[in-house]
Length: 172
Image (cartoon, rainbow, N blue to C red; front, side, top):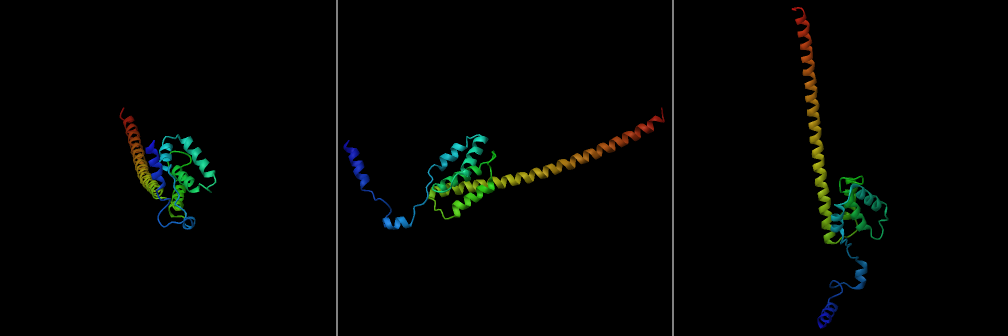
């Protein structure tokens, strides 16, 4: 037990805040917003069904973004940035990320890094999605062209077969 007393006494010796910060300056310069549960939240929603994701997205989008606004806004952005459900809204997620990262709310370093990583992942996914859509469009056009060519060739074959049958009848 003496060890516990030493640990407690040692903690009392730690400074209460950063050097040079007085209670007056601390009130004027608010601490950055910390959202410690964001990575755990993101990992948890990775296992959600599409309905659970949509329900969570709708719930957060209808909540008041007042007191705990930055963290809820970050959670909403993460949900909106996740494809595969009705609440998927990449443009809205990009706006949420921009408000959080470029807005007046000061975020702690880890929350900021996590949101930047999430924003960049969404941007990369959207770029890949756009490229795949363009590729699909090219493939659909190629298929349409080939189907049209096949139909034209089939029409030519049918016409030649009809001509051949009509000329063969006279030689029977």
